[in-house]
Image 1 (cartoon, rainbow, N blue to C red):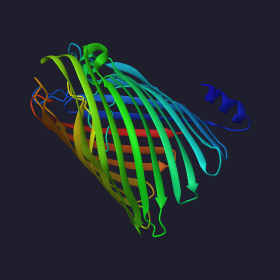
Image 2 (cartoon, rainbow, N blue to C red):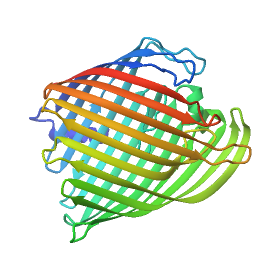
Image 3 (cartoon, helix red, strand yellow):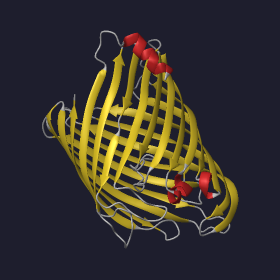
Image 4 (tube, one colour):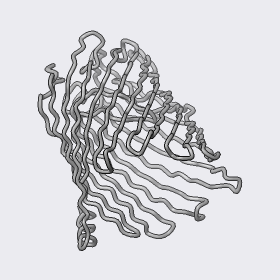
Length: 395
């Protein structure tokens, strides 16, 4: 709040910092609850106005935004511990700040508070969660210093997340408190290759607030890598190790009392390739990754996740653009005393077609397909199709 007041006091005079937009989307889901046999379909109408207070100076960028969301459901679920309303109001409020203290030192900060039911993203690829109500507060900060201009830089970063689900059935699994810190470096050789190095630490407490089951984990990643641009192509590779430790204790639903802890060191890394055409009208990307990350399946604390993602985009004209994305991700969960391990995997694809009448008005059609396959003790397998048509106007 102090940063907001500072921005208003310093820069409001003589400018028009306010920007407004509104979007409306009609969506369809043919498997509302992610069920293998008891499928229920649902239409959703989402209306999202947004107001931004933006200020720009040579060394200071500031954006404070608020976006309420009105949601109307045609067929809300009515299941004990997992219910929905036919109409709900959600909120998204946040702040982004960039301050260039000097030519070499840049500070960034962001905070976002969201009350929503939209599925969350995690890992290098998308993990699909159910549409259930939760609130989450995220804080991110970083400082980047150029040791040698345009050749070498060091970035120090930190983050904090607090997330709470409103339905007990998901609170037991997905309530989360996590923090992270890291330091990364880049150095460009005379040959054009960029050498990368980084180390990060993340700690999480999962699902303990209402379930009586406490799950915590700590993951340290250290790695080195290289990056290079080859004409229209770019490539990036990072390899290292994930050292994790975890502690699980309490009563797990359907299992009983669970107490175990452990630690492990596993290889981890990513490989990315990208292509951009001369005109910039076509972009293609590929990412493959393997990491130890926190688990979203109770009673496990961590998982080994392998993911592959392909995305492509092409602008047929200044008005029409098509985007495609495909992802495959597999999680492995280790056995423990009294707890059987297993795996789950998701294959998904999405397509987005955008038509812009002008820079202020656009129409977007989307389609997404999910196919979950999992061991019975991990989660239910199912398929889902989702589609939507949206209109957005900016003022």
